[in-house]
Image (cartoon, rainbow over all chains, first blue to last red; front, side):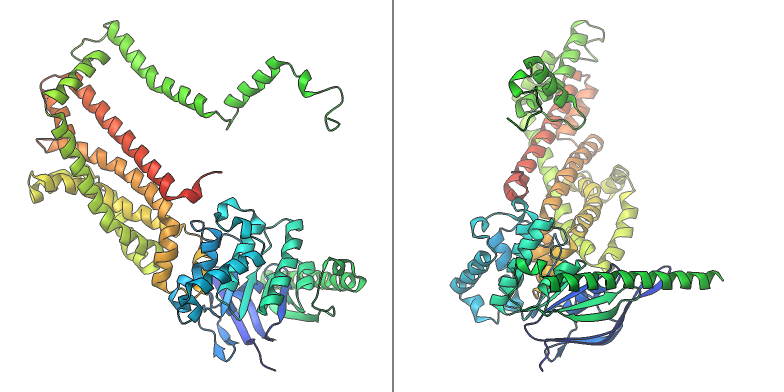
Length: 276
Length: 284
């Protein structure tokens, strides 16, 4: 099987004045092309750090990340990233935000970039795909939080990356908007065939979106369990009330709680040792 | 209608209560004013000191030689324009401020961008600039006269010294306030360092940079007047100094008011520029 992303024995420490903490401890994980992988876990489990290392925005202390056959040593056009908020360029309209990557030299090799008509067409198609045709000439400050995240998704898709990394992209949205956005992301990804790594702290979101869900445990960040979501990829609202889905959600949520409990016990024990 | 509390309807609210509520809004903590109300209060704020000035003058509490009346000042200002070369004074002062300020801007902008973007540049520049900016620019006047003579260069240098070091530090802060997510988004789209500085960091910081310019341009005027009072034979500051020698208190008043109005004008122009250049910041 070919792998879109191959992570092997990845470890990362953060150093502070009070000493260093292990954020990621020996993470190994393979992601298949076209897969929708979600990573869920309590805060402090290192899920965002893992994503940022895949993106090339942070470096690991040991181990490696391969995308295709190349080792990751920095950010690249093959891995677009969608952030939680504040990543749009406020001085550009929706359309110009989506077209931004076309203005960078890294995308010049693309023939599309030279054919201005084609790139505009693609931008407009992506904007309509995320349902924002009516506001394509508005500035981000004139849009709601949900609309801004749709722009961020369209912008990430613009340069046709093989992988999109999403770091709690709906974390700042209200519950209703979040559900709409989840359906939107599923339909957009189905059309574009992109590999997705999606980080969230919301178990239901992770199960609803992912074909596989990686549960990470905190202090230090480790892969706890990998769940295969047994539902087919054509997902809709009805799935949220499917008894199998509800049972799986219950199970994963319990496990998340256990990982937090375990790590609390462990750190309490360590503290006792230090005091003794 | 059925959403309302029983026994209360909008019509039943007496008009007096409604007006009272509006007034409460006006003086409420962080309350609001309509555009017209704001203009009225602002006008009152400007006219009150002038009125007090006129009354004190009319009551002749202070001798005219120390405090001329508003009308005397207007007359003197008119004769300054017609007979005493006001336009020359104004022009040379504007020229000095423009030169000093532009020179500071041209050097401070790239340095500020560097200091706000790259840690080594910050470490190299900022502690040093911090040290120099605590030396009062006014104290450089004797040195600048020694180095540059009494010509134009010494005044322009004082304005440069008074604004340049602060500008580098403030530009650095403006640039550091660009959200990291914007920079990282551009990095994941394959942006090079130069592309990110020119296409993300600079345009993102631009509104803050212009505001910094507006603030420092105000300081440039202060240093201009200082330089002209100490070492010049032309300009608005010099005119005020000369007026003092000849006991023309009315001209001192006129000079101060002119400098105030110039500052206000320039501030409004830069605000308007901000509004035009950055339409995306307008509240809709």
